[in-house]
Amino acid sequence: MALVACTALVDRVEWAHRTRRPRGRLPQPVEAVDSGNPPPREGLNGRVNDDLNDEPFDPYSVDNRVADLEPTVPMALWELEAELTPAPSLVVVLGSALAGIAGGVLSLYVVYGLFRWPIELSIGAATFTLLMALLISGVILSALVDSRALAANLLFSCGLVVAVLLFFTCCILTGALAAVLLLAW
Image 1 (cartoon, rainbow, N blue to C red):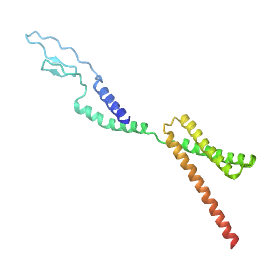
Image 2: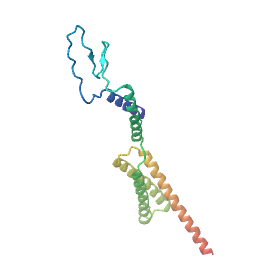
Image 3: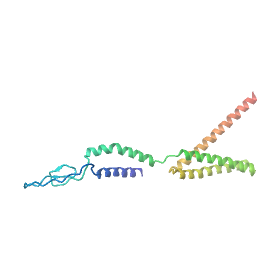
Image 4: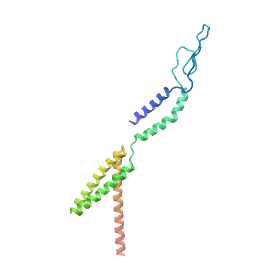
């Protein structure tokens, strides 16, 4: 798809250069001479055509056209490739991870604290709520931000949630180990 779009962009730039009208003075008509020979015909590009075939309209020579295309086409292709490549959005990743963690913590409190479910079922319900909150908020934020990288956004959000949970686990284990060592000493 990117190749088709790039080819269409190159064709459009070349067409624009071919069909550009010259700026400045228009060619003036040549007055007829009284001799028996017809006057030399002046082409649209201001040069005298010695042959009977008219040259097609070309405001720039080939060298100038190539020189004009060289700096613009790679930059335009680079910009087009950057636009077509979906990248994850930081706002969507952070927002959906925040909503997922908040939903998981709230559901754990409600299910375990208020409904008095066993801890195994409460953690399962909290995990399910975390994933659903992450998914729903990721889809809504991707639609609001107009991000085309929904899968990448959700993948990075899940990775961020796992990293946060691992960090909390590491902190809790380190704190518990420090407390045991302080009490034992």
